[in-house]
Structures are given as C-alpha cells and as structure tokens.
Length: 626
Image 1 (spheres, rainbow, N blue to C red):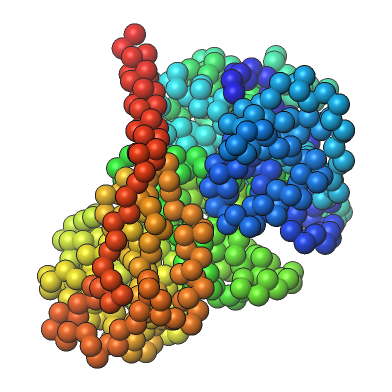
Image 2 (cartoon, helix red, strand yellow):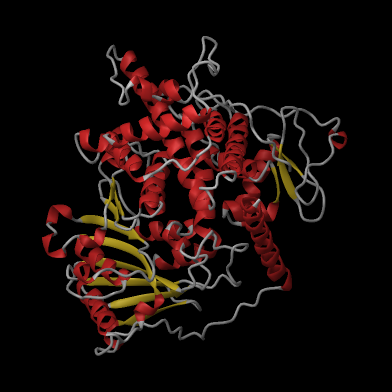
C-alpha cells in the first residue's frame, strides 16, 4: 500500500462526550463488541488488509477466538475474505467491497463487481463500528504522516524522538478536548468552567484557530518561523510555569508543568511543525472507542521505540507477559497498585483495563468503583524524562484522566523512612536491567549492591503492605548468583515473603535486552513454604518477527491457579533449598531445556526484516550527508 502524505487536516466523526458519559452501554453479543472493534482496529492499523496468520499474531489471540470473531464480522460484511492458500481478510468499503488476494494485497475492483452491500452494524453511542475501523485506519495514517515530517528534522533521528515529539503535541490536543468536555458538563449543570490555560495558549488559539465555518483560519494561524518562535519562546515557558503554580502534584496542572519542564521542541522548521499540527488537529479521541483505537496505535509506537535500541526493555515490556502477570496477581477494586519503575506505564495500563472489565469475575463496576479506579488506585514513579512523558500520555489514552505518575528516582528514597501509609496492596514492575546507582544511593538499602534491580527488589518488599502481592520481572541470574548481595536478598525474600511462583521466560522475550529473565510472584507477611516453577517454552525462538503472544502464556496462567505439575511445571519445598546459598536455579526435573530450532523460512524472514531496517537507517544518514 502506498501512503500519501497528508497536507490537510484529517477529520473524524466523534461521539458526543455528554451522550457518552450518560448513555447506557448496549448489551454485547456473544462475541462481544469490544473484540470485534479490536479486530477491525488491528486490521485497519495493518493498512486495511492482512493475512490471517499475521493479523492473529498482532491481536495475540488463539485460533478459535480469532476464527469466531472473523466469522461474525464476515457475516456482517464488515470484512471480506481474500483468495489464495494463505487466507486473508480486508476491511469492506461502504459498498461491501474490499476483497484481497491471498497475500493480503487488495484484489482488483473489477473482481468485486456484483457483491451485495454490507449491512451496517448496530451503533454504540453515536458512532458505528464501521466508522470506528475507519478512524483506526486514519489514526494510523496520521502517525505515518507525522513520522514522515519528523524524518526531515535533523534533531529527530530515532523512534524515541518521533514518539517524544508526537507525545507533547498529542497531549495538548487531548487537553483541548478535555477542556471542551468540562465546559459542556458545567453548562449542562448550569455552572461555568474556568479553563486551565490562558486564551493565547489554548490549542484553538495558537495551533488551530477556526473561522466561522469551523475551518482552519489561515490568516490567524501561526506558521513558519513565527510558529516555531511562539512554541519555543512563549508556549513552552508558559506551560513549564504550571509546576510552581499548581495546587498539588496530583493535579493536571502539575503534570503540565512537569511534562513541559522536561521536554524541548525538536522541530526546527515551523513549516514542518505546521504540517504536523494540521494532522493532529484532525484527530478526535473523546469517545472511549476512539481512545481505545488511538491507544492501540500509541502502544505499537512505544513497542517500535522499545525495539529500536539495545535498551528497549526500559520502555517496553511485552504486553502478553504483562497481561499474564496481572491475571496471576489479580488486583481488586479498592486495592492500590504501584509501579516504581513505570517506564511507558504498560503495567498500570493493563491493570486498569483488567480491573475496569471486572477482573477475573467480569463483574460490572458501580459508579463508586469507577471513581476509585480513576482516582485512588494507581501510582507510578519514573526517573527518565522521556519515559515519564510517555507514561502519562499512555495512561491518558487508556482512560486515566489525571495519572498519578511522579518524576523521581525511586531509589533515592530511604527505606527506613517508609511508613504504613506509604505502602501499597499490589506491585507490578519490570525494573531496569543491568543499571547501577551511586554509593550514596546504595546507602538507603540494608543490602547494598551496584545492581539496580537488586535495590528495586528491596524497595518492592518494603513498600508492600502485609498481605500485599507482587509480580516483578528480574534477570534470571538473581536466582543463582553467589555474591553476598544475591544470597542475602534471596534469603530476605524467602523469609519475609511467600515466593509462591517463579515464571522462567525464554531468551528473546525482551527484544534487544540480551538477557534471560524470570518473573517472581510473592505475597508479603508469611515465609515461603513451597515454590512452584513454570518453564515457559513457546516451541520456537522468539525475535522481532516472532514475538511472545498470549497463546504462549495461556497454559501458565491456567496451571498456576492450582500450582499443577506438568512437563513444564514442578514444585520445590523450601526445606530442600540450600541454606547457605538459597539457590533457586530453574532445574526442570522433567527434562532439561530443549533447543527450539527455527526453520530456514523464519531465519530468512528475520534477516529480511533487519535488512529493511538497516536500509532505512542508511537512507536517513545519506539524506543528512546531502
């Protein structure tokens, strides 16, 4: 598919925020509207057509679920089947057309002549799923167009830069919509709303002023050097000042001040900036459906950013792994959830989605439950500026209006100062691999170590309430290292907590990290009696073109409920553990590690993908050299 550069704003049909807030959700059909929306959104994000295998991997569904949802959408003619041995699907257009060839490419329009028109699907709120999938495709086009503009900028050379610059603009656009929603609600209640931003700094004043017809007012809109200078010299300093004037750290005003105190505008061309703003101004994400679609694409952008460098694990933990951890820990409404190394907030976002849908029971939440979930559940901390901004934006797009994410180095907090009121019920985290902290920071911990992850593990134990539960990722060498810090920390964990489950992850789980990991599941307050181990073996080597998916973890989640033995799982009594070393090495009594050999086709596919990435990098370098 050829993507055309966007020179005019994209426009979408948005649901009314008032109707969305007050309307009752219609009952879902057997397969669930959300799953169908997710299917259509993922297909749109892939360009509108895709092979069944590729789409199933993106969705990370098992084959039966995929086939069931596909059949429902086929019956409604919202998608159409492809031809060829591989099997593929495509979004249907307004006339029910859109068949594709076996490789996922669009079939000729002539071949589609005579197909009946599709039947529209029942509306949700004031939009349809057809419009929903169209919006997802347009969101994807918008991100591609923005990236194309950013590639022209000398100061934006990586996926990290693209995500950073897109994030601050998306945030301001989101803030504009939030202000409009609050003003509408206030008017409905007979009151008034005081905007957060002064008039000259609102999106519709400097970024996208409109004329009487609702179109961009080119006479009033900044562009070129005027736009760049306004952003750099007036807008950013103004927004940065909110950190000092905000009433508290959990307010949206404080978040504004922190975000813009940490970022710089790297778009040096005011004309490029104008083009990007025009694209973003066309985005509408007030309804839950639109936020869901945009959040999926933003997650994909974070994933690409995380995979772009050797330190990708700092920004991106594979979402199937996070979802499995959340299911096992099973956070409940009324409990507090904490991630002190929040990164891009993947754990908090997935926990929010899990709890919003009623957790393991699927129970419907009351208004009070939803208020608790929004305002009194999640806390994150992040040291790095870029990750901090991405975390806030990601949580906002997932539906958390004012995320409680603090920009701080968690490890500078002295553990001896922690009070009961500071503790949490649930901790979900993936602390940085292989980092190190200064000697003065290490003084805050009873077991001193240069390994950042070991300091974080002590923080986790200290910050849990009695009876609190944790699911945390750590390098697998923690289980067997013989240095004093490792041995002492394993002893502390076994004696102060019930380490009930260890998930051994295969190499390649974290792209670019170059280390094997385990997930530790423990409960504070009682010593460990028995440890259940599960050795995850997806039956293939994991890589960029073959990542971890939900199907790979389904057996683990199911067996963990009863700590069942299997060829991949076994239990060890704590009495059998060496009291000198407290060695917890993963040693499967049912047989050692089996080597999963990749097929020549898989190897060639990965080589081809890497060659494409290398060519793109060389092309950008060539462009910079003139």
